[in-house]
Length: 251
Ligand code: 8X3
Image (cartoon, rainbow, N blue to C red; front, top):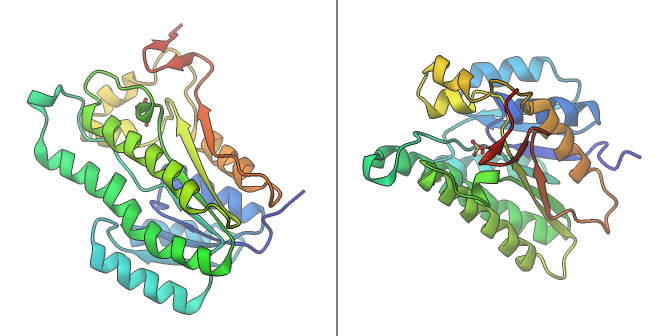
């Protein structure tokens, strides 16, 4: 059963990784797309590989004014059925006393404030239409803190909590809110966290089969492609070799 055909989905952080994989899968299900991210070229390339109608908008989600401008523009063109809050990142893996305050601000501004900037007007729009589905990309880090995770873990815990609150705010409406909380997914995530140190990033995924961006995209499609009365609120997903951030079996 395809409940997604002809729906319109807005995906943030769509230029690579989970965002790009989700765009591809949703397009296969006949979903028209609004893709946002910072890299216009990558968004264009992705758009050219998709079969459904796609609009791209390059801006920085940390910039409140730019988000506002984008939302006003997009809502003057079309409605939105689905919002995938995927933009997010981790920077650094040091104990708190050695952490970089600028890195913390980037994570907080992207993973929490950016999500809020975009969610507020889109939630309002969905409430007016009495339908819509918001998917927030959480993390195992939002459930179980791990060494050096401090601020990243805190941002994801905040996002999990926000998802719960949004479900409460959606009480009495047809709006659904889902959190996907992945464990180890091999994307640019660790490369970004370790600021381009590819060796360090590679080590994170050695000795086991990590999840791929496509695995998460499949999960997002599963959560979205449900009948109107079904709201999958929370999904934990990890590689079979990983049971929590501390228990990762490496062959
Ligand atoms: C990404 C997964 O394990 O690095 O959120 O926190 S992890």
